[in-house]
Length: 170
Image (cartoon, rainbow, N blue to C red; front, side, top):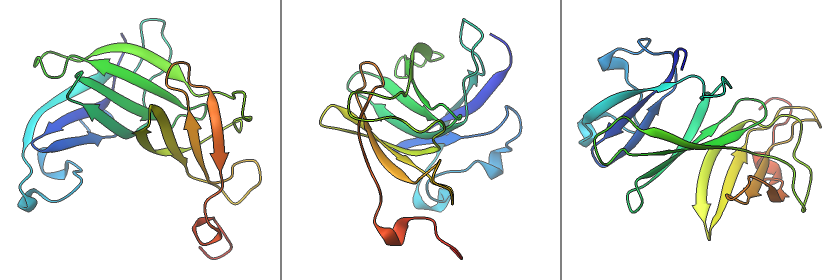
C-alpha cells in the first residue's frame, strides 16, 4: 500500500481520529474530543493506509464509530462519493486490518447527490445514519441520510430544520 492516510489514535475512554497526513501532527497538537485536562490520555497512534489493495484512495475520514463487542472500527470518508471503511483488530493491539470499503450509493428509497460531505456517523437500529454538510446550492443540500450497512444503499433522506440549513449570512 502506498503512502499513509489518517492517523488513528486510541484514547483512554474513547477514540479520536486525527485527520491529516502522517507526521503532520505533533504530540501536543493532537485533536481530541476534549482537552487532556479532562482525563484523556493517548494509548497509541496508528497510521492507516491511504490506498486499499486495489489502489483506490482511502481517507478524508470525518467520523468514527468503534464497537468493542466485535472489535470493529467504522470510519466515514468524506471524499466526494462517500464511503465507510470497516477495520478490525484494534483490541488485539495489532495494526488494524481493513475488512471492507462500503461505498455510499443511491438506493431504493432515493438518489444520493453526486457529492456528499459526510460529517457524522451513528449506528442505530442496524442502520447507518450520516449527517451530510450542505452547501448553498441545490446540488449539495444538507441532509440526514440513512443507509443499509450491508451494501451502502440509501434508505432515506431528510432535510434538517430550516434553522440548521445553510442560508445567506450563516
